Image (cartoon, rainbow, N blue to C red; front, side, top):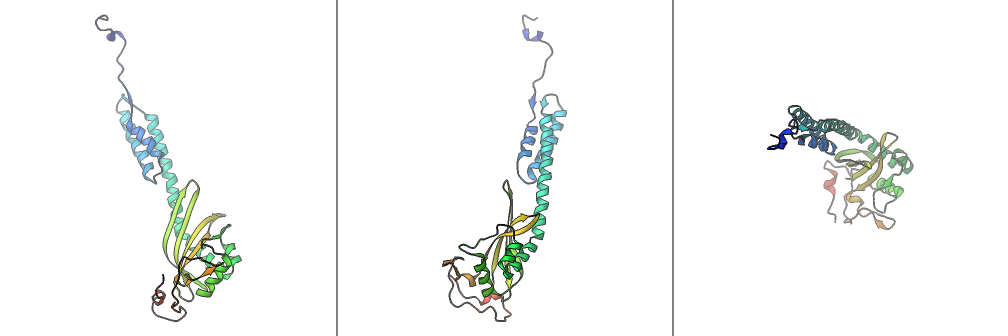
Length: 239
């Protein structure tokens, strides 16, 4: 018998095995940085892989599947924390912005104290005290923050990057948009950069440079006049 078929004399038959593809997909899914999605895929695919592996003796990869499940759970925990922090920042970001504006319009020193260390004006060619005086002369005092039109939050290996855009309400009613950047200082969110844009600032020059990119026509409305109309309706054309 062994001469006719030598293969039959070599002991019991051992079926070929292969690694579960679901386990492989689970492992690599858990390593991806797709908020929520990659973690969920890692857990679900890992669970399916274990079920597949336990139902047959020809498929292996249980350790890989378990790693994918644990990695997926960690992924969900991390991104869940980021999402919670995002919601907290979005909810409370008005407070440090309003506090900075009130302090900055009082004095540059007060503004720097209310801001994060390293405050830098984003207005091109601008200087902090010159900008502050220009705001007071052309708008009057700060009244309140208007509606927030934009909120950007990004998180990467360098940390978090936060910026917002608000309509700024001044005492004389002139329209103005403020863009702010933030940094966390002593566990508190503070302004670290700012930029103001308004038609009534377009002719402003600081250090012989136009800091707000544009020229205005001379027929700017008087925003101190009482009116039932929106302040922007009293503007003329600008270019």
